[in-house]
Image (cartoon, rainbow, N blue to C red; front, side, top):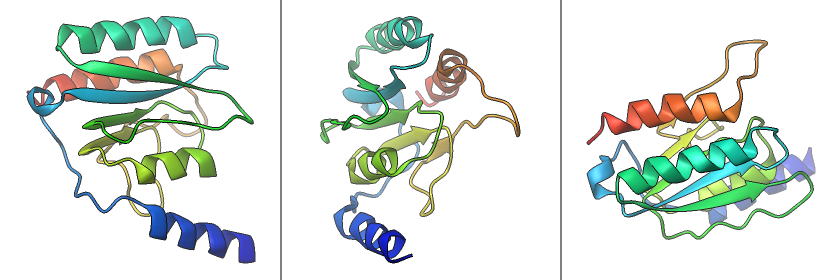
Amino acid sequence: MLTVLFLTILLWLLGSRVKTGFTPLSKVKKAAVLLCADDPDFEATAIDVVRFFDSHGIAVEIVPVRKGRLIVVRRKVELFISLLPENGFKAEYVARRSKALFKVGRYQMRNETFDLVVSDPEGKRFPQREVFSTISKIISQTR
């Protein structure tokens, strides 16, 4: 119980204070995308992500995330996307610390960190490639 309280306070203290919301792709110069590197579709998803952002003239940083490893993301991006299939402290820490103007994820966090959430239906888990395809269609309409 004490650990949860400590982590909650830590996230609150270190979290970004930047106001976020739907941001048109025309205002995005850099994006960071967290991908689960342990998923079998990691390579294919990474290729799709790079193609999508290249076609919009946006620099993208692919962040491969593995269980038990630290997550390092540059904080100076306008768009932050987490395709990680589960909620964990490391993923929440990185998302909350990000100073991105527009944040997208697969699940909502306690303080509503994400501006757009594309979640899996109850009891199912879609591959991150399919989830990114859905996200890319939605954010393409924000031009």
